[in-house]
Amino acid sequence: MTSSTNSPRRAKRTGPFPRALTCAESTPAYPGEFPQRLLRVAEPGELIAALPAMLGFVPERSLVVAVLHGPGQVGGAAIEAIVRFDLDGVSAAGGVEQFTDCVSAVFAREQGTGVLAIVVDDRLSSSGAPLRRTATLLDALGAEGIAVRGAWSVPVIAAGRRYRNLFDPAGSGRVGDPSASMIAVSHVFDGRQIRGSRSELTALVAADELLCARVRARIGPEVVRYRDRLDLARRAGQETAYQRRALEWVLWQIADAASGAPRAEREFAQLAATLRDRAIRDAMYGLALGDHAEAAEQLWAQLARATPGTDRAEAAALLGFSAYLRGDGPFAGVALTAAVEADATHPMAVLLETSLQSGLRPERLRKLAYCGHQIAADLGVDIGPIGD
Image (cartoon, rainbow, N blue to C red; front, side, top):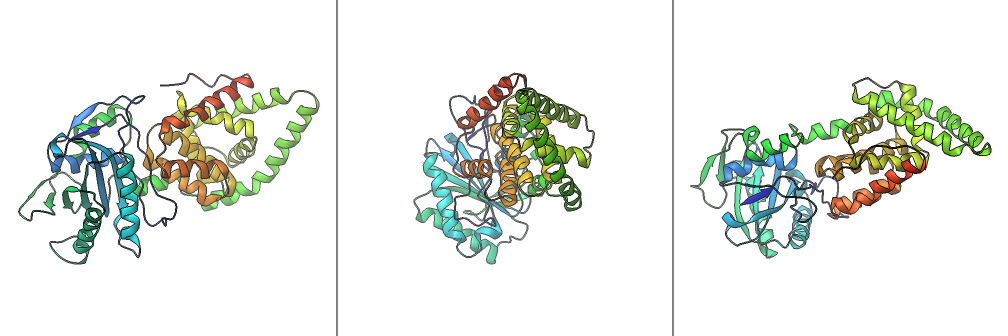
């Protein structure tokens, strides 16, 4: 079995799914624009050890489904997508139907020929309700015509932990070292982070309520100040010049944030006010394809933690878009969920989350980044080269 380690991840959660049911983290292998470096996974212990690298974090209490494409024999198939579910979500009322709907959609889209299933749950034993629920889920896939070609369970993903074959009670083995798997090493070389848990992702955008309250009090005056000055510049025929200086100030904030310097409350408020200028906001999407993407993400994450409502949604949408384009579906999903929860009517946040849920390929969104580059250029600012 093979897995592409230089392909984008995407999130998937179809419209009616409750947020408790996470059908979110995947690593689809797209042809064409994204070159594929194939790494062979020879046996279940290696596959289980590779899951943290594939997902970007160590899954806990999760059901992970690998969609296969290619020959019927597992040894010759390629993993087209890895999809993770929260076990508590799929065990809830209606969870089985939602689970099969989600897997069926991914399976059809990837033209799957079978799936592998890995249950990560510290509550599993050789019998009992958790194991029966897992069997129900796998049986439901079979009833949908999706062949489950292998299934294993493991309490936690850690080197040396024993996994069990759910189809063969005598079949078991040891999990390899997740940090030493070839896929993990490849991802580290590519600069991708592998986080200890999904909660580490959510913590990156979790609102700091005390800071938000202090910044909120400053945002109104900063918005008035920005708009008044923009109106004065417009009447003087200097609107473009004013916006150029504002854009340059945001770029300076990005560079300063990358150095590790903390933002002051007034700076957060000024950033929020400046990003309410649509031209400035849209130009920022161009950074997702350039050398400054990582630095920009640091600032967007800080701003998302420091601001409430629409301003939080704005920052989280920028963060989610950047993560989406670089192939980090799990983090993109977390950021965009935060954006929509902050403002369910935010057009860009809703559009991006819907795109992520529906499995839209990241390259289809590159046009938005190109437009951001052009807007910055129209204001007379070079925001850096566009990466591959």
